[in-house]
Image 1: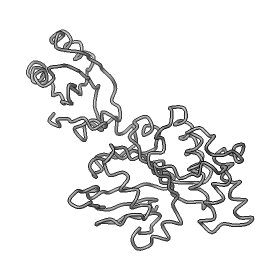
Image 2 (image 1 turned 45 degrees about the horizontal axis):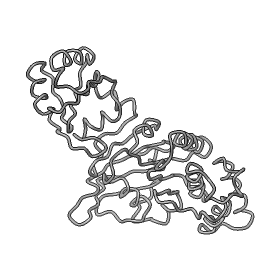
Image 3 (image 1 turned 90 degrees about the horizontal axis):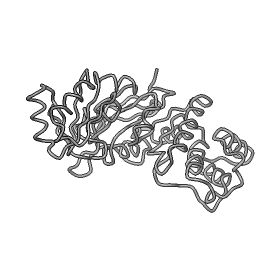
Image 4 (image 1 turned 90 degrees about the vertical axis):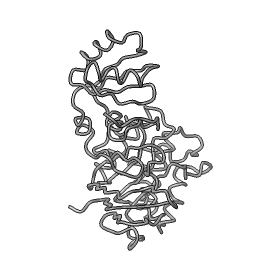
Length: 313
């Protein structure tokens, strides 16, 4: 089956800085795929390339089999794009925004009217069609953004940080909308995010850092790549404590600022032992099952928020 999105050895440089470094990515048709990574990790550069707004320095990028450099017009006909910056006209109604966007794709007359009604129904905005966008909540505004991108019935939807500024309830509602699009229209959704809970709800997650895809798989498979529990310790003496833990318990701890992160098959036992042995030096000790954040830290050596780490151990 032909991939919906595929990149091979994709490279893009801004001067001496590499934003993408031989990126290989495959998104299957019908998937809801999340690219998880920090700001500056290369996610937006990749989206600009896939949207034919930026020519890659080297390598290949294809959408529905069409090369972004050789066949940009074919790519544009098959994608819908929602970038971080709002593109709706807040002084217009929801329906007016859709109709004006439809004009950009050559839609008019009965076709435009039917398509507007179809999109409003699919996104759940029929009862808001006559309202000015400025009166809508942030979550509903993002729905209007998605609705605009669907007016030409794309096969692939590119969403750059679609949940920025939304509360948890609105993020869940947005995820339900993407699932509805997948089920009713067969749309493939490729989204970028720095939110772990948003990535957790997707079919596949690719972890990207400094332009490199460091891990890719289902959320469950990625979490399972870490055996056992994750013990997290905070201390004002973290570097010295790290060496003491290694010497006394033979456990390698990853240093992240004033935090130590330890993978252990019997995490609760180790946490108790650490509390008994170093109680006065510890601020907190927690134990939990692995999360996508733990996968990110293990693969990159730093937290998603950019805190420096030490990949040793």
